[in-house]
Each structure stands twice: as structure tokens, then as C-alpha cells.
Amino acid sequence: MSVAIIAEDFAGMRAQASGLVERAGLEWHFHPVRIEGVWRRIPTRFCPAPLRATAPIDLPPGTQLLVSVGGTGGAVAAAVKKRTGLPLVQIQNPRMAARHFDLIIANVHDEIAGPNIVSVRTALHGVTRAKLDLARVKWQPRLAVPDRALLSVLIGGANGRFGFGVTEARNLADHLIRIMNSAPVAVALTPSRRTDPEALNVLKERLAAHPAWIWDGEGENPYHGLLACADAIAVTTDSVSMMSEAAATDAPVMIIDLPGRSRRISAFVRTLAEADRVRPFTGEWAPWSVTALDDTGRGADEMIRRLAL
Image 1: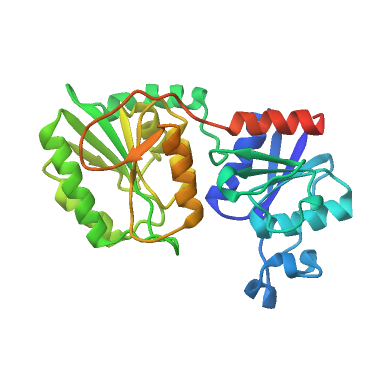
Image 2 (image 1 turned 60 degrees about the horizontal axis):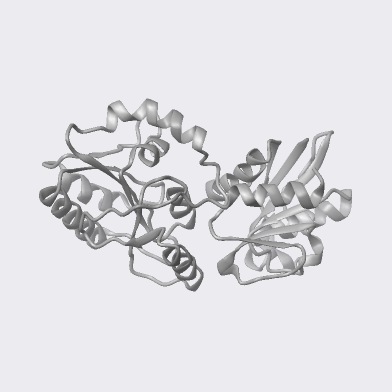
């Protein structure tokens, strides 16, 4: 089955949709939504003709299913569904009537319910047990420090709701140094594309004299390696995707609080905390026993069952 993914061209959205489709054993092709003109200033769901407001979306022959992500992607994909008659699966709250979609897979913190809505605790993603096993074989020799456990640190950045600047980088570096000085722990850290370069430089300078490795952005991305090899993971609170992917591993996950506020992300963190899957990052080395938490497979199973794929 050929699946058309329709969404804005953001890595997180693409990862959620491709993760769902691949977990269902299906092939996909991506169609970016690029809203043009005056319609960029208002929510796409209010646009009377979404397909006229975006760059053309041409589906190849054999496309049998649509998958959309987010409010903008959902509004455009609903118009494609109306034009083609193809079934449509929406990821995240579309912020428009659920009747436009055959199935909606939304997070618990979206607080929506209905007969065609499946609630999941984590963001959908493409991190699987098989990918982690392969990454561990590749990255363990590079990341392992003799006689030290590995703390993998996943850093995001400013996103309109949270901030991560020089002050936060200094505080984080102090916490990491305290851990490395008080326990047999090494640190492996990877920034994201949103990480402030000045904040990253602070981390590099402060951690240079310690058993810490920081990805410089060159060569192969070590992200899956950090997930696979970690004895514990610390991740900034700005990214539901990174927190969800970390929770899919066998490592305990600590949430690095950042200045800012998001009701939805706070509710998401509470959901994982209630399952004791995550705890606050306090600068102390105190890992605990956990079980991997990943609802992507359940979302894929529900999609297959409900749409008889």
C-alpha cells in the first residue's frame, strides 16, 4: 500500500507520520504543505479553499491512504480527501471537526475524544527496538568510557514556549559536572538544530576537562546511538518528540526543566511521570528501573484494524 504523508516540512512532523506508517509495514511518500500568500497569517482551517493556498500536492498513481500531521496539514489533507475520496488518518489534534477524518491519533494531553479518535501517551515516532539494537552495535565502541555508566543528554532549544540560552547552559553544565565528579558517569551530549550556538559553546567549554563527549554536527548523527547506549537519558522539556523517543528505550529518563510554559507539554510530562517513566533532572545520579513506553505500535495497530488495511 502506498501512503501519502501531508504535513508542513518539519522534521518532527515527518518523523511522527513516517514512524506510524512504517510501524504498520507500509511505504510512504512525503508531500510538504507550504501555505502561500495572505493565508499564512491565519489558521488554515479557516481557509475556504486550502488547496489553492498551498503549493500543488500531486499524488502518484497507486496512492491508497492519506496521513496528515498538525492543524495545517490536516486542513489541507481533508481537502485532498474530499477531492480524491481516499481514507485519511490525522496525527495530533486537527483543531477542526473530527468528521473530516477517518481516524485521528492524538496525544492524551490533547484532551479530545470521539468514536474515530485514538489517544496515545507518547508522540508517534520511528524509534524501534531493531533500530536501537543496530545503533548500539555501531555506537557502543565510540561512546563507551571504561568503568563509567553513560548519561546521554538530548538538548533542544527555543521554540516559542521554552528557552535554552547561555544561563541554562551554564546551569546544565554545573549539574553534569557534579554528576561526573560524584559518580562513575560519562556524558554524551547531542544538540538539535534549535540549540543556541552560544549556549552550545558554553557546554563545550565547561565540560572540556571532564569525561564528556559533545557532537559537533559533523559526520553521522549519533542520536540513535545515544538513545541505544544510555544507562540514563536527560532531555530538555521543549520537545515532546525527544521525550517520547527517549521513553521508548530501556533507560530511565530525566526531564531538564527550561524557562517557559506550555500547558500541553506539562500535561504530557505528567502523564509519563505518573507511569514513573520520567523524573525531574536534579543533577544527581540516581537511575531507577523502568519499562520502555511507546504507543506508536498501538496507534499503528488501531489504524490497521479500523481501516481494514
